[in-house]
Amino acid sequence: MAYTPWPASEPELAQMRDFNKKLAWMPRFKIRNRVTPRVIQALLRVSQTLKKAPPAETRTLGAVPVRILRPAGKAKGVVLDIHGGGWVIGNAQMDDDLNLGMVQACGVAVVSVDYRLAIDTPVEGLMEDCLNAARWLLSSDEFADLPVFVVGESAGGHLAAATLLALKQWPDLLKRVSGAVLYYGVYDLTGTPSVRTAGPQTLLLDGPGMVEALRMLTPGLSDEARRQPPLSPMYGDLTGLPPALMFVGELDPLLDDTLQMAERWGAAAQVEAHLLPESAHGFIHFPVAIADGVLAYSRGWISARIQAVLDYSH
Image (cartoon, rainbow, N blue to C red; front, side, top):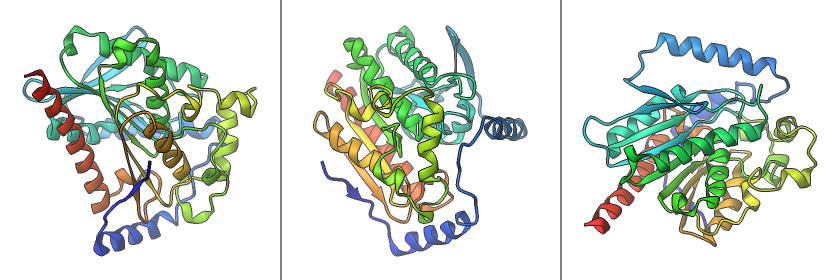
């Protein structure tokens, strides 16, 4: 399974390089304690109260809150969105802009999972929340006839892949998933080579510091135990998983995670993996043309699969 270099024009590359100069002034994100994530989370909530949010429905599935955005007309499909944030920050509302773009472009409903965070909950609890939300969505009469997609970014990519692996216990539910879109996920909780050797050119994320952060995330476990799926989805049996679309930037410490995961997933199912030039971790949030192009491509990929399901059913 080979990756495809993203076809960026010279003006797009120049724009990204200029943006990277700004990123280079920022400290690279490193989880050293439980205090900093709490501060960042509080600031996130304050910023969200100051911003006008789109109409959304909040619902609690058992103990798992979800945030639902719906299209104006009848939904053509449904997306399970799993946000990023290093497992320790973030919430379902932080993806509103991306999810609203998906709703409008694809005519889907988006169900975003407000999973618990690892500052208070073991990572297995986060995985359980995402699995419970997925099982509810895939069993719900409300979405019974709609194609389902799972979308995850960064830590959300890890949780999305872990969720799909766990769904193999319920084959009929897993069959309902038409595809997965994964942006620069974490698939090996011991740290892939690109994480361990990442230098300052990687921007935003401190790669070597991630190894210690991953140990903090999984206290008391040996590296061998951390590699066990679904904790490290890379090493799971990926047969039966849906087609996947993956993206990673060449300046991302998590480069090997996506490329190696695409290789393994591609042996079992259809996979399309794109390597983004001059792009750091988190690039889909950057105000640049390359990010706009990737998001448009992802939405087109989902729309094409929805259309294929509609054509087949008719």
